[in-house]
Every structure is written in structure tokens, then in C-alpha cells.
Amino acid sequence: MRAQRPARRTPATDALSQDTKSRILDAAELLFMEHGFEATSLRQLTAAAGVNLAAVNYHFGSKEELFQAVLTRRLDPMNQERIDLLARYEREAGSKPLTCEKILSAMLIPALRLSRDEKRGGKHFLRVLGRAYADPAPFIRNFLSAQYAEMIARFKEAFLKALPHLTKQELTWRLHFVMGALSYTLAGTDSLKLMLQVITNDQDNDELLLQRLAPFLAAGLKAPLGDAKKLELVSGD
Image (cartoon, helix red, strand yellow):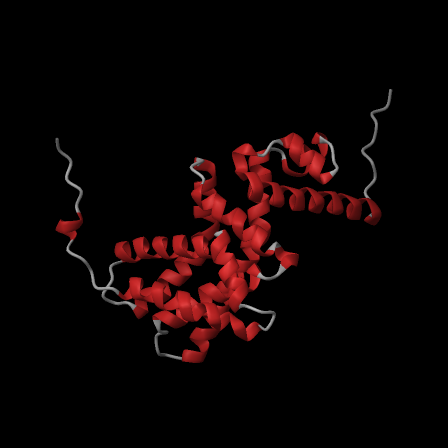
């Protein structure tokens, strides 16, 4: 008995497969936004996407891999935009180091653009990202660290030139706080309501939120080093 040959792939079947994959990702993005990773079941996912479990397994393998795919399709383009914008600012500055505020602009503007672009997930994706930052699951934390590694390394290099009084270790901590504040601002419901008041479809209005957020972040980054001894946590009775 001859072995059955696999179905022949055609442009039509490829398009159908891509459509199924996109529907799963779109449904998963909304469900993860509403319920978080742990509380979202595969049954909910298949029902919302109108597919069977086999389709989810075929395209993603597991719920963990699906969650990573939801983040990757939005994070990769946004982080590349950040790197490209930083490179453009550096070319324009020539041999002069960029200011802390200019570097922050390169980090913030792509996130703000995404926040109002519904075709790229908009505020829904940013709420998913906010949930991911708060999630204690080790695989999520490890994934986000890896996903941001190239972008953070690139921006750290620029910040070290702009902030020569900081050690690499101190800058690492401060960038961690910057990313946390940015994620909260873009993912928090109250913050999004505020954003809607100051941001329209005009691209120039990115500056309106930057005027509020950037000075706060810049002040934290540029603050003088504290007394390490006073910051030590002493254990005892």
C-alpha cells in the first residue's frame, strides 16, 4: 500500500492558512488583553477564532508559543522603528552625543504611533503588553527580556554617552524603571483615556504626550547617583 502524499500547497491554500493564523492571533490578542495569559483557555481561543484545536497546534504548538507570537508580531516592528529612529537622530547630530530627551523621543514615538494604529493592535495590544510585564510567569519574563535585548542594548549605548555620570549597572536599573513607567502609561486604562484627550490622528500630536512623559523619565535618568549605603536593605530581627 502506497503512503499517502501530503496535500499539495498552492497559493490559495497558503492564503487560507495565513488567514487562519491571523484570525487566531487576533482572537488571542483580545482574549489575553481581557483575561491575561493564565485565565485564557484554549477552548476560548478556538471558539473566538472559529477554528479547532488542531489549527492552533499546527500554527503555534502551544498556548505559550501562541502568546509569544502575539507579542512578537507587534514588538518586533515597534522595536525596529525605535532603533531606526535613534540611528536617524544620531546621523543628524553628527559627532555630538544626543540629549537624553532626544533618545527618549526615539523610544517613545514608535510606541505612541502603535497605540493609535488599530491595524497593528493599537491600545488592545499595549494592554496585552502591560499585562505581560505584570505577569509572574518565568517564561514571559524571559521572553520579554530576550525580545527587548537588542533594542535596550542599542539605547543603553546612546544613554551612556548622554549620561556619563552613570555606571552601566545604574543605567540598567534606570532603564528598567523607564520601561516599566512607559508600559504602565501606555497600557493602563486611565492613561489611555488621558491619551485620547491629547492625541489625535495628526502625527505631530505625538509631541503632546512626550511633553508630559519625557520630562518625568528624563529627570529620573539624569538624577545624581544616590548614596549606596543608604539604599542597602539591612536584614535583621
